[in-house]
Image 1 (cartoon, rainbow, N blue to C red):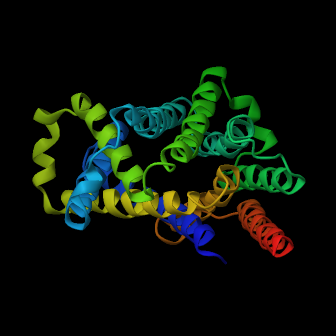
Image 2 (image 1 turned 135 degrees about the horizontal axis):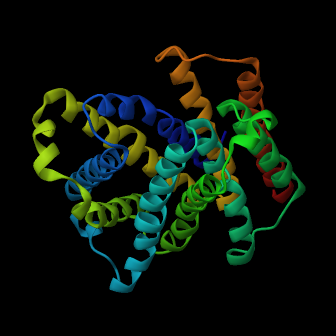
Image 3 (image 1 turned 45 degrees about the horizontal axis):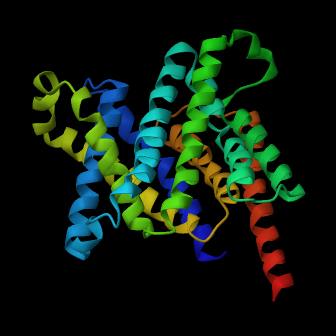
Length: 297
């Protein structure tokens, strides 16, 4: 397996660990959007410190006009998809909201076709279908409960999928001028500034002086956020956006395994079939990439 694809899969796998950190922070009384703020701010601080130690000059924009790319990745993607995701969860259920979030690859494939002229190949369509079907199985969405959906929750769920997809799209533009580490850093710095007015400092700031709370907040910013996005964005630099979005759907598989073995959540044969579909789609994309490379050589 080549490095870019491995980086994308590892980054997505780290995203799958977010539930463990989030559940711990919920236990301390934080709301979903407050956890999003903690995630963005802790990752931004970690990335700024790392960039300052490694190469301070890389913390400067080459042109102020480039800020539009990071407003795209930071606000239109990171903040927007989290807001839509949490609203969809509130209006429906976590499994339904998660399944709708993973309409992201479909949005990436369509947008990439028009913006980057990435072709619609038969392999991509098959892998995408397997991914969407597998994700539905993993999160427990089946035809029998579709009647329970309401129109507003579907709109917010699809909005989360669109916001999730926009990170890959905006990153493609910014990676022409900036490294993957710079893209990730500027994304979370912009998102952190945008979220600054929305955190209830007087009510919740005292919780952050608790050692356990600080541990989970920093861990949330480091593993499933800063490190995950660095890996994913680095892999995206050498991979088609549509292919990367399909590979990244190993995230719900990891999240499901954490739920089973850590939180002792039930696991069904339908979920097992869904995991097989997602892993199968990853293998199809990888094998197709190798075959295409061998033909070119």
